Amino acid sequence: MKKKSRNQMRVVRHDRLRRTLAGTADTPRMAVYHSLSHIYVQFIDDDLGHTLVAASTLEKVVKEAVKGTCNVETAKALGKLAAERAKAKGIENVVFDRGGHMYHGKVKALADAAREAGLKF
Image (cartoon, rainbow, N blue to C red):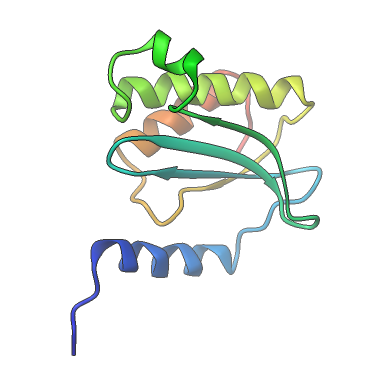
């Protein structure tokens, strides 16, 4: 039997998480994904299937603020930016979706920065 790749195993973990996590209009799902080179955050209303707010390291605002594109410092800055955008849209409570990634490093830094900026998980 062929061994599954790291990304295939991440998708399996994410599917397992998604069975219990769902975002609504009141408490959207804060979905985090990171590749080797970028980090992405979306606030999703799963009832309608709409992305309410998004932020990523591809944006000019984030690129100018920090060095690098996928490290812990960048994740902190992105978490703060995402939380500010969410609060501007009236989002205060969210369900955190780590996307199958382990909760440490970049994912933890992003979550902690979003909490410090005022989001409640």
